[in-house]
Length: 196
Ligand SMILES: C[S@@+](CC[C@H](N)C(=O)[O-])C[C@H]1O[C@@H](n2cnc3c(N)ncnc32)[C@H](O)[C@@H]1O
Image (cartoon, rainbow, N blue to C red; front, side):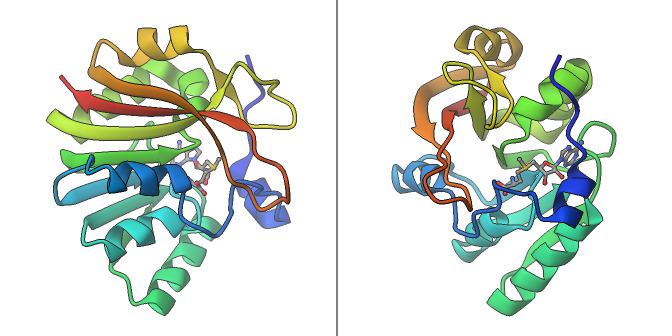
């Protein structure tokens, strides 16, 4: 089992390669394709809020949650500067009430962490936060590439076994994450799903 990341320590020390400061190219592609319809969105494990703010900018009513207070403080400052309305909350996706059900869930780099922390609690969260027809775009590390120095990784077989019972997996494709380190673009899975 991979070692649990101390995210508060990572934000405090600035070791946050995922925090690219630009909206996810993969999220933008899926939005452009006309998927992710609806009005409410939850970005869980939102970090410093770049993608939540982008969704708000495009007219979604966005709730965004992260377990690290420092990340949420930065996210709130960024939203204020961008005049974007996002309901940013400090919270634990595995334990706290997520609200909802939401039309859209989005996560970048969170399913691949929480699946090894407590898969059952994570699946319960998914059930509570979605209803039939809810979309979920998840961006996760891909086991076809070494985990070091990249994100935690997951295989296609694991994705289908863990998420397939609750969601139709509409598109499962490879992509590369953007990071804040030049040339560091770990391989990922882009998983587009709809709740059964
Ligand atoms: C790899 S980072 C990605 C952050 C953000 N999604 C992004 O793309 O910049 C994973 C994020 O999940 C958050 N996180 C980890 N466990 C969490 C939990 N149980 N509940 C809420 N957030 C969590 C971390 O604090 C961190 O911000």
